[in-house]
Length: 484
Image (spheres, rainbow, N blue to C red):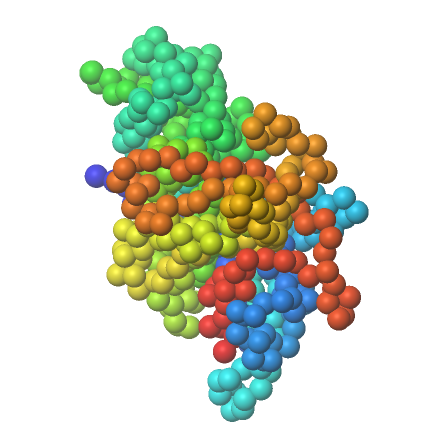
């Protein structure tokens, strides 16, 4: 029987945290938005674009509060939690707007930032129609942490069975061979030693790391902190691996028992505090997904991504929020699954990319709606790195994207230097997304990583304008109802 993801003590801590949030700003409502993503999906870019567009009133025709003239403005507010690093917005924006623009570093730890939004409400507030304010807390955390949450409902034997089954699949053969060989040569019933634990953990971590590379792009491979250990690197809580069940009783001094204790320590020290202190206090969630990368890697990566998204949705505390229940038990009432990097394909395929995303989360979305939460899938690019054009070859016109590939990107034997602009036909997504799942046919895409836009426009106030694809629609879905 799966374990409960929280204890009574956890629930008390969650309720006290929510009450503390309400007491800190009794007259200003606060919306907590969680932002995460799987495998280089662009979390830092998304948050930087979100903050910059709200601070400068960016070009957001699909953001109703702005187009209706009711959005008055936003300002950076005092950091709400002294124990969480502040999201480095200014540094990330500087990277994107430098003389030689470059993408900022990826998320490797949790961070947070608060914006205070002022808008003209259409509602009757305090006996009048007029300006009101909202605190928007943006919580950024690595997608690997999110993939750890299902562990809270699994004991060591259950997790081991799942992990070893995945490692034994045909598409994991090359990456998992060395690790599975170590398992076969290990007697888990013998006396435990740190040397054996470290050897197994090292082989397991190497398997996880190679499975995340571009050619594989697998997602459902926790524990996530094995790849982002931080201060816990080398600690017993990060030194374990899955093991097959023992034939007889498990002695407390055995290697199996040692790794089982370390697995439980990982949940207690790493996973449970994240769920209790951060994840369970969110109101809205956006999950950014590099769908194109999975499609490029083949059917196994697509199926793996689907499993990851289903597991993720199962972890969310979903349901409808109201001002009373939010005081003690927040629920995530809206979830956006965003297929990022829509600028890496032509606009003629954007709706198809969105359809693929819808197909990936279809089953989980139905469960979310039953619980009272909304979900939406969207193809978007928070910052557009390419533009579109048409080229003619042999009397045939081709719709292409134009951009500058990053240093080291390779296509058809050409390695790019990070300065050469090219026109690229990226390929077409299938008209019907079910073809990806039923036939298992790989999608042939010319997928390259591009440099950030090299020349950015400025608006009438002299603020940088960040080009995007459907980012305004994403923003309106995530916070627009709070600005009515």
